[in-house]
Image (cartoon, rainbow, N blue to C red):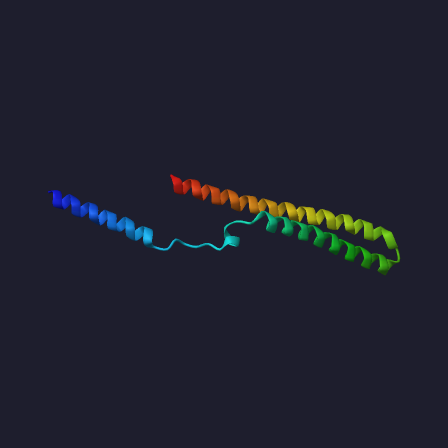
Length: 110
């Protein structure tokens, strides 16, 4: 009976060792989470892009209609609002991904 128990324990130990020897799934760093610097640069670029597009549209309309500062100022504000809105969406997306990852970790722990 002792030999039977030893054989079962040995098989269980071998199974554990084999499971540990298998390579873990390697995730690319950028897929797993955003670093704070990447997130900050992404948000700055979104804001500046919104301002730049608003400036371009406003300047183009002002030069087309001959009303120099009106559309320029108006579309700069619209571009700023669009940039902030895009930044908020990006922040919500990153937050949602982090919450999903944390929830998966909690589920894995038991």
